[in-house]
Image (cartoon, rainbow, N blue to C red):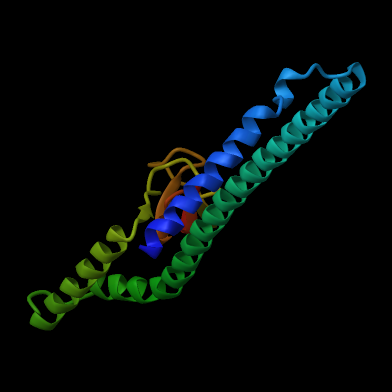
Length: 186
């Protein structure tokens, strides 16, 4: 019973509050003075200007952050490629020695055949990592890809072209890891 009394009192208070509100004239119904209207217009214009400035600043910050993120990703990729290239460059002399050993191997030797298998696996590993051998024999000399160790007269090869490769050169993507050491025709 006490609960019903409390609910009834709350309803009466709500109804009294509504009656008071209905008796009061609404602020929207009252005409605004010219000074008040101008002040409200100025406030609205100022708020819109601040909003436009904030939006512009936010958009610039977002664009700066996206550019920063792209630059960091590019730098990280470049660093990764550089580190891979440096590591491969340190290992290439081992491959060179194995290839020279295979050029002078005895025929029908099981041990030499095993070394040949190691060389092929090594070459396949390099190819899988994106390392490509610079093809130089017979090509025009290009200082970006070749390092000349001698200029020799040659009847078989055109002047300015590679006669022979002394040491293979390698590339990782578009980056030269090691230029090919070549003999060039005069």
